[in-house]
Image: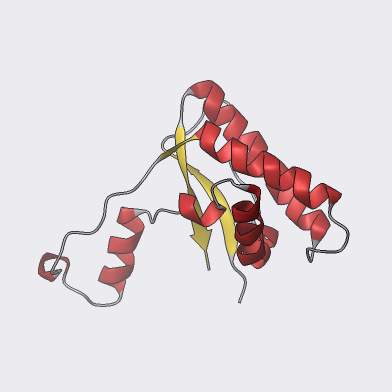
Length: 135
């Protein structure tokens, strides 16, 4: 099973494509979150928030009547780009200087670099974000 982690912006950024692969991040997510904690920065998974519309669609596809849900679904959470940049930049530094301590180092660095690029654009445009996951 392939898992990908990616950036979800609260709205599209002007003249910027926020697509990213994220499969190397998905494969190394647990290890990266452990490293983030050791570095004293917010782990990437703490930036995760489900897309409420997507969740409702999945529940509906599963045959659940949306008007019968017992509790309201949690609202989407949004984070400042600067918070994410702090984590991503510390992880890039750690991964780049590690020696064989993380599997798929090139892919992880490429995904982190792309995430940094997207979050940098988001910060310049005053956009918030959260982490999305694709399974």
